[in-house]
Length: 398
Image 1 (cartoon, helix red, strand yellow):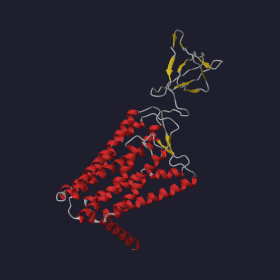
Image 2 (cartoon, helix red, strand yellow; image 1 turned 90 degrees about the vertical axis):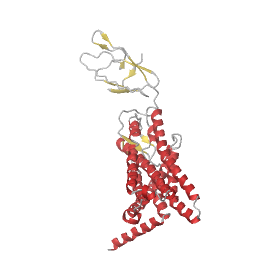
Image 3 (cartoon, helix red, strand yellow; image 1 turned 30 degrees about the vertical axis):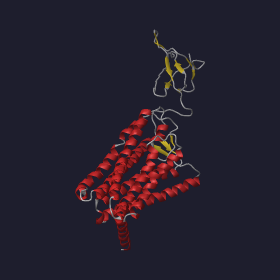
Image 4 (cartoon, rainbow, N blue to C red; image 1 turned 60 degrees about the vertical axis):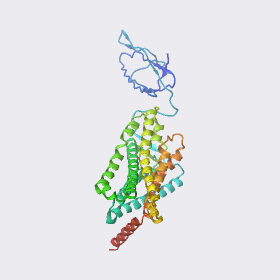
């Protein structure tokens, strides 16, 4: 028989790797006894005994509890699994701690300033493209309408992580609520998925414009373009509810510290109390499908474009075709290069610092570079942006 010291009126029993057999003696006549058991059978077992009774003089509880005069309770035996040291167990998580980027106060202030400047420039650059496409009627073509939607998407994509990151630099606790963490998870990954779909649609648009120029006006109509844009937005936000619900239902062990600046599946899986290979496999398979599906579509479109461009006899024609697609290829390379490093293969073995840097590149740096890439390599966009700036100066002077 195993006896357990009673430390308080509410005792949580955790005895790793041994057989727990606990019993309670019959309570005194005028005392009450209430026992509730909560057992989690996946990786840990908890038995909580809430007692409001007098204990034996040696303050030990023994097996065998007599109910009435004739009924004898059989003892309860529970195998508990080995628990990791210094990790408490709970059934309800209220909040997580996002560590973000570690460093002394001066380094934190420098990172805060740099990321704030990047964020403001990203909003201005992508906002300028949205305004240029909206105000310049010469840009009311499928190519630029897609580009305007893509710039609008980038504004929301960077805003799903950076404001909370900046707040964490100034916060002492660096906490985020359970709901806030998974909402950020959903928003960040849904917008990232939408971006994958937009890049694929933009590649298809370039394929039609270069490989099938005579059929382009009849295929890429305004209605068809609007359908593609709506499909990107809707499908992007319908992909991740199932994986997020599966992960959110897992039991998490404390301390609830996420060694990242964003709620990401890798650090969240590291906090789970139970191994979840099936859910991990589902998530990584899902991520691979979402990444590789649009990527193969982009690869196929530009393979056909390259083959068509190489058939153009004049060098000027080839240069014009390459310049039209060059900016898009640069954006695809930046985005997909970092995305595949992060999510196609499990990154649990990679250092957390490397994960943060890679995530920072595709979630913060890439949205900053996109307006520069598209505007510097596109003559029509540069003219439209110049026109927007001139109109703003006129409005300010008047």
